[in-house]
Length: 329
Figure 1 (cartoon, rainbow, N blue to C red):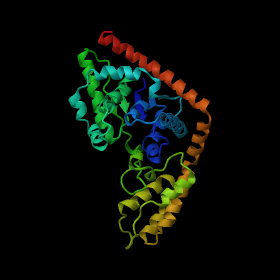
Figure 2 (cartoon, rainbow, N blue to C red):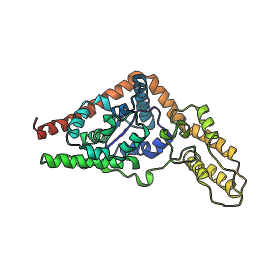
Figure 3 (cartoon, helix red, strand yellow):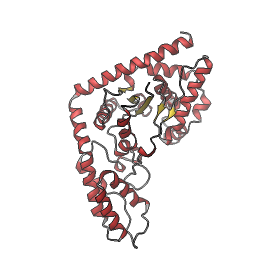
Figure 4 (spheres, rainbow, N blue to C red):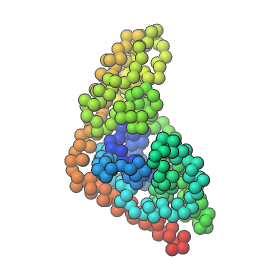
């Protein structure tokens, strides 16, 4: 019997190269070996109060991005969180056994309190409970998580154990973090600091559906230094970042050419960035075209979402039926 893997992403529009190399590429590989559930976490996004138009638009774009990246609805369950009402029912049940003190100690909640003091809502406080509901709803064995989500996964295990203890059952599994190992490639941002991601600003990321001119402008503004002053000197972090980006979208010969130029102090960063921009455009072109085609075919997207919801609801209802019975309903 295949192990179950679950992963979700908030609907914030197009996915970027960091998303693709960090997880999506591996998700595509996993579809044949695991029982995979991938969902668009539109309920989670309500903690920041998106407008209705943005929520609908971004949800559709993320769905198109998932499909363009290679997720196959025939091999996995791909669904929108709000299409599965059982999510909120399990969320309610778990909240009844989630305690204020532990929720207030969650690092991400404390960060949000500091960053957005004008919007400290109950959804932010119980975010880990909703995430636990997402995971436990399909009794997932594994959840691919980043460093910033490890505490949430630990809380999902806590809620699973707490429910099992309270109702004298072994129904819920304790989900484990999925480690991609060497298959997980960390993509740096264009600003020279940290990883690629929207939280660092859209100018820091290259998106799968991004227009060619926009990619060129962003890459040409990427941070560099004044250049090497002695042969074979160590590259500073901002230059290592550019070479890391080059290594994932360019040919080995191209990477070797610019490495040699750096080591003999003849490198021209303008030439490197022009090459990087064109190679990024070539790499993202199939995604860009596929995303455009999918967004133009609303019926196809609606069909994928409906079929995914049906499969997810069938799995979720089995869990809810068992949970209601164990609680005593």
